[in-house]
Image (cartoon, rainbow, N blue to C red):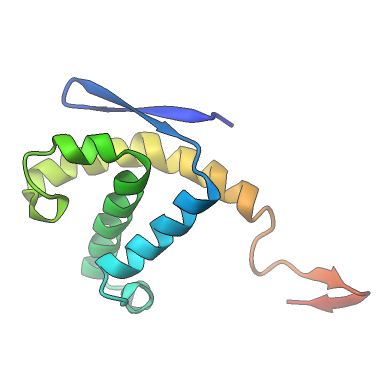
Length: 125
């Protein structure tokens, strides 16, 4: 597991360090704020458009908390990015950030949610 990654964008490189507990919480709060407390509803809808919106929310939340210097150099607020500029960021995010973030999630949740675990000798789902 890498302690940090380099996020390359438009000829610049941005260092993203392993999140702290506070940053992780802030990311989750940002997702709720950016979705106007509808993150779960978007997730449950399973519509392609909702998946796109969730990607936009996730990218903005993660980069705003973990790499604010990248957000600062954008010519406009993230929500006002053109779709072509956004897709360029999304491409790098998927190639560089998501695999690294998946490893972080394995640290937080080493067993799948649906795995049975024993608690005081009882099995639970």
